[in-house]
Image 1 (spheres, one colour):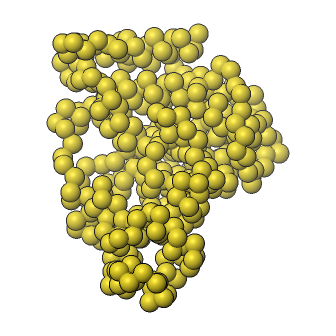
Image 2 (spheres, helix red, strand yellow):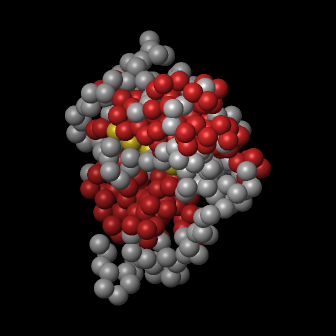
Image 3 (tube, helix red, strand yellow):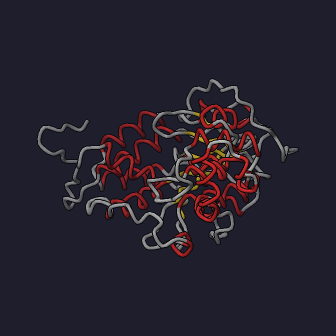
Length: 341
């Protein structure tokens, strides 16, 4: 890789096992597994499903990495290098499989063009700038990386990566524990006793308890909280003057968005009361915008559509090395060899 001037390369399985919040100490496995509770990889537990927000990770890596180019054709690939390095350090080596345990991996991506949310609200994400020209082509290389490493990937026209994650979680949560790799608060509505989140960069485990500590409500009320608070980054209107803290207070009093709106005339603060009464439709629309779809028509070939016994196969070392050598990803190659030695 070529760095720009002044930038160096730098059997009898439980179907309803609950994940406790005590982390485990594991040697010789990827860093993600060391954040998880012991029950997630216990021999009696079906293979863990790991669903990764590939689009968010690519954006995050693109802005974190220098604009490296590959000698093959001069294509900028810094985002892919960060993407690969993050996933390799998180996932490799896989936990040993001995008749049980193990993991399945699915990586989700957005597609170009509008989604069903734009049909609900034409101004959804209308405030966002177009992605940098040098980022788009890197997604093709990221998908090549997924195929080289044997990580199933999926995207669906009309839906976002988060919707695919929600659908995978919905399909798998009664069969196996689930780990969502991402940092978007929209994904927190999916967290429960069998589904946790891991921030891929900060290496933070998100459980129902940590959601409640941060937002003042549990995951089951995150949709209602976001509906009132809105989201400026996605251009979701919400209710004016109601941020996450006030939304949590209202939900603490009334229990749900529907009840907050039904009792809005009893809110003591005049301006807050007027906004809730006058922006009922905006709040209800916002709820539909932040609610993740759990019925995306994902391919049947994905691991979550198979039996709960499906798990990630062994790393195809020669295929991985061919991809890394072809793209001159020397740092990733060194990391893979160090972790798999």
